[in-house]
Amino acid sequence: MRKTMSETINLVQLHNALLQGNIQWQRHALERMLKRAISQEIVRNVILQGEQIEDYPGDWPLPSA
Image (cartoon, rainbow, N blue to C red; front, side, top):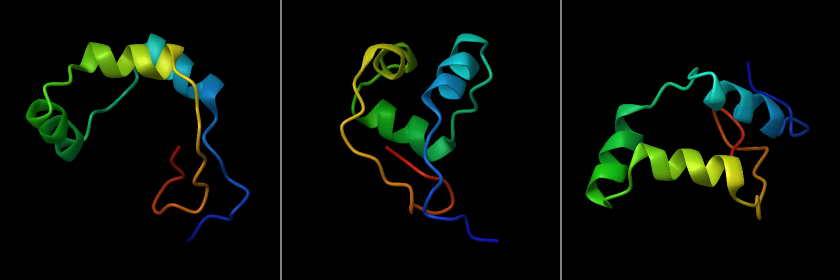
C-alpha cells in the first residue's frame, strides 16, 4: 500500500524515539556514515538541534526531509 502525499515526518515522534533509544540504524546508512566519517552522535545532534529545510512527503517507502 502506498502512502498518501499528506504524510510527513513527525519531528516530535522522531525526537522522542531518538531520546528513548528507539532508532534502528539501517546498514546502508551506517556504511555511508562510516565512509564520510560521520558518527551516530553527530546525526543524533543534527536531528535534535538542526533545522528542517526540505520536506519530501512522497518519498518511498517513507517520507523524508
